[in-house]
Length: 304
Image (spheres, rainbow, N blue to C red):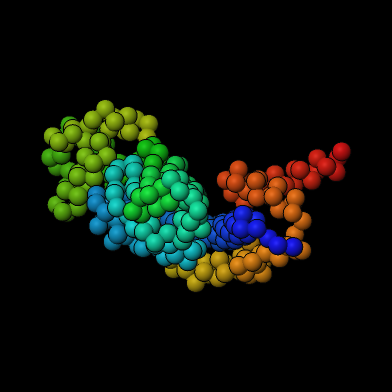
Protein backbone atom coordinates (compact mmCIF):
# COMPACT_ATOMS: atom_id res chain seq x y z
CA UNK A 1 0.00 0.00 0.00
CA UNK A 2 1.33 3.40 -0.96
CA UNK A 3 0.99 5.92 1.83
CA UNK A 4 0.27 9.44 0.63
CA UNK A 5 2.06 12.52 1.88
CA UNK A 6 -0.94 13.65 3.93
CA UNK A 7 -1.17 10.21 5.58
CA UNK A 8 2.53 10.32 6.40
CA UNK A 9 2.16 13.78 7.91
CA UNK A 10 -0.84 12.60 9.91
CA UNK A 11 1.07 9.61 11.31
CA UNK A 12 4.06 11.80 12.07
CA UNK A 13 1.82 14.28 13.86
CA UNK A 14 0.16 11.49 15.82
CA UNK A 15 3.55 10.06 16.83
CA UNK A 16 4.60 13.48 18.10
CA UNK A 17 1.39 13.76 20.12
CA UNK A 18 1.99 10.40 21.76
CA UNK A 19 5.61 11.26 22.46
CA UNK A 20 4.54 14.57 24.01
CA UNK A 21 1.87 12.81 26.07
CA UNK A 22 4.40 10.28 27.32
CA UNK A 23 6.89 12.97 28.26
CA UNK A 24 4.26 15.08 30.02
CA UNK A 25 3.09 12.07 31.99
CA UNK A 26 6.64 11.31 33.04
CA UNK A 27 7.07 14.91 34.20
CA UNK A 28 3.81 14.73 36.16
CA UNK A 29 4.98 11.50 37.80
CA UNK A 30 8.29 13.12 38.78
CA UNK A 31 6.49 16.24 39.99
CA UNK A 32 4.17 14.30 42.26
CA UNK A 33 7.06 12.36 43.79
CA UNK A 34 9.06 15.55 44.36
CA UNK A 35 6.24 17.63 45.85
CA UNK A 36 5.35 14.88 48.32
CA UNK A 37 8.83 15.00 49.86
CA UNK A 38 9.71 18.70 49.66
CA UNK A 39 7.87 20.35 52.55
CA UNK A 40 9.64 23.53 53.64
CA UNK A 41 9.72 24.82 57.25
CA UNK A 42 8.03 28.21 57.74
CA UNK A 43 11.29 29.74 59.02
CA UNK A 44 12.80 29.27 55.55
CA UNK A 45 9.65 30.38 53.74
CA UNK A 46 9.74 33.63 55.75
CA UNK A 47 13.16 34.47 54.31
CA UNK A 48 11.76 34.19 50.79
CA UNK A 49 8.61 36.18 51.57
CA UNK A 50 10.53 38.95 53.31
CA UNK A 51 12.87 39.43 50.37
CA UNK A 52 12.43 42.91 48.92
CA UNK A 53 14.15 42.27 45.58
CA UNK A 54 14.85 39.49 43.13
CA UNK A 55 18.48 39.48 44.25
CA UNK A 56 17.44 38.86 47.85
CA UNK A 57 15.19 36.04 46.63
CA UNK A 58 18.11 34.50 44.74
CA UNK A 59 20.21 34.55 47.89
CA UNK A 60 17.76 32.37 49.85
CA UNK A 61 18.36 28.65 50.25
CA UNK A 62 14.68 28.04 49.43
CA UNK A 63 14.92 29.63 45.99
CA UNK A 64 18.11 27.74 45.19
CA UNK A 65 16.44 24.51 46.27
CA UNK A 66 13.43 25.35 44.11
CA UNK A 67 15.69 25.83 41.08
CA UNK A 68 17.44 22.51 41.68
CA UNK A 69 14.15 20.71 42.25
CA UNK A 70 12.57 21.92 39.01
CA UNK A 71 15.70 21.00 37.07
CA UNK A 72 15.72 17.57 38.71
CA UNK A 73 12.11 17.01 37.66
CA UNK A 74 12.96 18.05 34.10
CA UNK A 75 11.02 21.32 33.94
CA UNK A 76 14.00 23.50 33.06
CA UNK A 77 15.79 26.22 35.01
CA UNK A 78 13.58 28.77 36.73
CA UNK A 79 14.77 32.35 37.04
CA UNK A 80 12.92 34.78 39.28
CA UNK A 81 12.43 38.09 37.44
CA UNK A 82 10.00 39.96 39.71
CA UNK A 83 9.22 39.95 43.43
CA UNK A 84 6.30 41.83 44.92
CA UNK A 85 4.64 41.42 48.30
CA UNK A 86 2.00 38.99 47.07
CA UNK A 87 3.31 38.13 43.62
CA UNK A 88 6.34 36.53 41.99
CA UNK A 89 7.26 36.05 38.35
CA UNK A 90 9.56 33.43 36.85
CA UNK A 91 11.06 32.81 33.42
CA UNK A 92 12.15 29.53 31.86
CA UNK A 93 14.21 30.48 28.83
CA UNK A 94 15.14 27.01 27.58
CA UNK A 95 11.84 25.40 28.34
CA UNK A 96 11.74 21.63 27.65
CA UNK A 97 7.93 21.62 27.93
CA UNK A 98 7.41 24.18 25.16
CA UNK A 99 9.67 22.06 22.94
CA UNK A 100 7.10 19.25 23.15
CA UNK A 101 4.60 21.47 21.33
CA UNK A 102 6.66 22.67 18.37
CA UNK A 103 3.58 22.46 16.13
CA UNK A 104 1.56 24.78 18.38
CA UNK A 105 1.65 28.31 17.03
CA UNK A 106 0.19 31.33 18.75
CA UNK A 107 -0.69 29.38 21.91
CA UNK A 108 0.55 29.18 25.49
CA UNK A 109 1.28 25.52 26.07
CA UNK A 110 3.22 25.13 29.32
CA UNK A 111 0.38 24.48 31.77
CA UNK A 112 2.38 21.77 33.53
CA UNK A 113 4.93 24.35 34.75
CA UNK A 114 2.13 26.61 35.97
CA UNK A 115 0.68 23.62 37.83
CA UNK A 116 4.09 22.77 39.27
CA UNK A 117 4.61 26.30 40.58
CA UNK A 118 1.14 26.36 42.11
CA UNK A 119 1.60 22.93 43.70
CA UNK A 120 4.97 23.90 45.16
CA UNK A 121 3.62 27.04 46.85
CA UNK A 122 0.41 25.39 48.03
CA UNK A 123 1.68 22.00 49.18
CA UNK A 124 5.27 22.68 50.19
CA UNK A 125 5.06 26.28 51.43
CA UNK A 126 1.48 26.18 52.77
CA UNK A 127 0.53 29.32 50.81
CA UNK A 128 -2.63 29.24 48.69
CA UNK A 129 -1.51 30.38 45.26
CA UNK A 130 -2.56 30.55 41.64
CA UNK A 131 -0.08 30.40 38.77
CA UNK A 132 -0.50 31.22 35.11
CA UNK A 133 1.68 31.47 32.03
CA UNK A 134 1.93 35.09 30.87
CA UNK A 135 4.17 34.56 27.86
CA UNK A 136 5.19 31.49 25.87
CA UNK A 137 7.74 30.76 23.17
CA UNK A 138 5.04 28.89 21.24
CA UNK A 139 2.95 32.07 21.28
CA UNK A 140 5.82 34.00 19.71
CA UNK A 141 7.35 35.40 22.91
CA UNK A 142 11.06 35.37 23.71
CA UNK A 143 10.66 33.08 26.70
CA UNK A 144 8.06 31.36 28.83
CA UNK A 145 7.07 33.64 31.70
CA UNK A 146 4.93 32.66 34.69
CA UNK A 147 3.17 34.66 37.41
CA UNK A 148 2.33 33.31 40.87
CA UNK A 149 -0.31 35.18 42.89
CA UNK A 150 -0.11 34.52 46.65
CA UNK A 151 -3.03 34.68 49.08
CA UNK A 152 -2.30 37.76 51.26
CA UNK A 153 -3.54 36.49 54.63
CA UNK A 154 -1.50 33.30 54.28
CA UNK A 155 1.57 35.40 53.44
CA UNK A 156 1.06 37.58 56.52
CA UNK A 157 0.64 34.58 58.79
CA UNK A 158 3.89 32.98 57.64
CA UNK A 159 6.08 35.99 56.82
CA UNK A 160 5.55 37.81 60.12
CA UNK A 161 6.98 36.06 63.15
CA UNK A 162 6.59 36.55 66.91
CA UNK A 163 9.10 39.41 67.03
CA UNK A 164 7.18 41.24 64.30
CA UNK A 165 4.01 40.75 66.31
CA UNK A 166 5.69 42.09 69.42
CA UNK A 167 6.70 45.21 67.48
CA UNK A 168 3.12 45.67 66.26
CA UNK A 169 1.78 45.18 69.79
CA UNK A 170 4.28 47.67 71.23
CA UNK A 171 3.38 50.33 68.65
CA UNK A 172 -0.33 49.66 69.17
CA UNK A 173 0.00 50.28 72.92
CA UNK A 174 2.61 53.05 72.94
CA UNK A 175 1.81 54.83 69.66
CA UNK A 176 5.54 55.25 69.00
CA UNK A 177 8.71 53.26 68.41
CA UNK A 178 10.56 55.11 71.18
CA UNK A 179 11.87 52.54 73.63
CA UNK A 180 11.24 49.63 71.22
CA UNK A 181 14.89 48.55 71.05
CA UNK A 182 15.22 48.25 74.82
CA UNK A 183 11.80 46.66 75.27
CA UNK A 184 12.43 43.86 72.77
CA UNK A 185 16.23 43.71 73.17
CA UNK A 186 16.90 44.42 69.48
CA UNK A 187 19.98 45.88 67.83
CA UNK A 188 19.38 48.96 65.67
CA UNK A 189 20.08 47.17 62.38
CA UNK A 190 17.54 44.44 63.08
CA UNK A 191 14.91 46.92 64.20
CA UNK A 192 15.38 49.02 61.05
CA UNK A 193 15.08 45.91 58.90
CA UNK A 194 11.91 44.72 60.61
CA UNK A 195 10.30 48.15 60.44
CA UNK A 196 11.04 48.29 56.70
CA UNK A 197 9.44 44.86 56.25
CA UNK A 198 6.32 45.97 58.13
CA UNK A 199 6.11 49.03 55.87
CA UNK A 200 6.47 46.81 52.81
CA UNK A 201 3.57 44.72 54.05
CA UNK A 202 1.52 47.87 54.65
CA UNK A 203 1.37 47.18 58.37
CA UNK A 204 3.10 50.47 59.25
CA UNK A 205 2.91 53.93 57.77
CA UNK A 206 6.05 55.97 57.12
CA UNK A 207 5.63 57.62 60.52
CA UNK A 208 5.65 54.13 62.13
CA UNK A 209 2.01 54.17 63.15
CA UNK A 210 -0.32 51.30 62.30
CA UNK A 211 -2.24 51.34 59.03
CA UNK A 212 -5.77 49.98 58.81
CA UNK A 213 -4.24 46.70 57.67
CA UNK A 214 -1.95 46.83 60.70
CA UNK A 215 -4.90 47.40 63.02
CA UNK A 216 -6.72 44.46 61.43
CA UNK A 217 -3.67 42.21 61.64
CA UNK A 218 -3.21 43.11 65.32
CA UNK A 219 -6.79 42.10 66.04
CA UNK A 220 -7.34 39.09 63.76
CA UNK A 221 -4.37 38.03 61.72
CA UNK A 222 -1.63 36.94 64.08
CA UNK A 223 0.62 34.11 63.04
CA UNK A 224 -0.91 30.65 63.21
CA UNK A 225 2.49 29.00 62.91
CA UNK A 226 3.71 27.33 66.09
CA UNK A 227 7.39 27.65 66.86
CA UNK A 228 7.73 23.86 66.94
CA UNK A 229 6.73 23.61 63.29
CA UNK A 230 9.86 25.54 62.35
CA UNK A 231 12.05 22.78 63.71
CA UNK A 232 11.87 20.12 60.97
CA UNK A 233 14.74 19.82 58.52
CA UNK A 234 14.52 21.76 55.25
CA UNK A 235 14.24 19.46 52.22
CA UNK A 236 17.53 20.55 50.65
CA UNK A 237 19.33 18.66 53.41
CA UNK A 238 17.80 15.47 52.03
CA UNK A 239 17.98 16.34 48.33
CA UNK A 240 19.56 12.98 47.56
CA UNK A 241 16.46 11.24 48.93
CA UNK A 242 14.21 13.45 46.84
CA UNK A 243 16.30 12.73 43.75
CA UNK A 244 15.98 9.04 44.47
CA UNK A 245 12.19 9.26 44.85
CA UNK A 246 12.00 11.09 41.53
CA UNK A 247 14.10 8.52 39.71
CA UNK A 248 12.09 5.68 41.27
CA UNK A 249 8.71 7.13 40.25
CA UNK A 250 8.09 4.81 37.31
CA UNK A 251 4.90 5.22 35.30
CA UNK A 252 3.17 4.24 32.12
CA UNK A 253 4.75 7.25 30.48
CA UNK A 254 8.30 6.17 31.21
CA UNK A 255 7.68 2.73 29.77
CA UNK A 256 5.91 4.22 26.78
CA UNK A 257 8.57 6.82 26.07
CA UNK A 258 11.35 4.21 26.29
CA UNK A 259 9.58 1.77 24.00
CA UNK A 260 8.16 4.22 21.50
CA UNK A 261 11.24 5.77 19.97
CA UNK A 262 10.38 8.06 17.08
CA UNK A 263 8.01 5.75 15.25
CA UNK A 264 4.74 3.95 15.92
CA UNK A 265 4.26 0.68 14.07
CA UNK A 266 0.82 0.48 12.47
CA UNK A 267 0.20 -3.06 13.70
CA UNK A 268 0.96 -2.14 17.33
CA UNK A 269 -2.18 -0.06 17.81
CA UNK A 270 -5.82 -0.09 16.85
CA UNK A 271 -6.38 2.94 14.60
CA UNK A 272 -9.77 3.92 16.01
CA UNK A 273 -8.49 3.70 19.59
CA UNK A 274 -5.51 5.86 18.73
CA UNK A 275 -7.62 8.55 17.06
CA UNK A 276 -10.05 8.65 19.98
CA UNK A 277 -7.23 8.79 22.51
CA UNK A 278 -5.50 11.61 20.63
CA UNK A 279 -8.73 13.61 20.57
CA UNK A 280 -9.23 13.10 24.30
CA UNK A 281 -5.61 14.04 24.98
CA UNK A 282 -6.07 17.37 23.22
CA UNK A 283 -9.07 18.15 25.47
CA UNK A 284 -7.43 16.99 28.71
CA UNK A 285 -5.33 19.25 30.92
CA UNK A 286 -3.29 16.41 32.40
CA UNK A 287 -2.58 12.71 32.03
CA UNK A 288 -4.51 12.05 35.23
CA UNK A 289 -7.59 13.64 33.70
CA UNK A 290 -7.13 11.60 30.53
CA UNK A 291 -6.85 8.36 32.52
CA UNK A 292 -9.96 9.29 34.49
CA UNK A 293 -11.90 9.80 31.27
CA UNK A 294 -10.68 6.49 29.86
CA UNK A 295 -11.57 4.55 33.01
CA UNK A 296 -15.00 6.14 33.18
CA UNK A 297 -15.59 5.23 29.54
CA UNK A 298 -14.66 1.60 30.24
CA UNK A 299 -16.95 1.51 33.28
CA UNK A 300 -19.82 2.87 31.19
CA UNK A 301 -19.16 0.28 28.48
CA UNK A 302 -19.04 -2.55 31.05
CA UNK A 303 -22.25 -1.34 32.69
CA UNK A 304 -23.93 -1.21 29.28
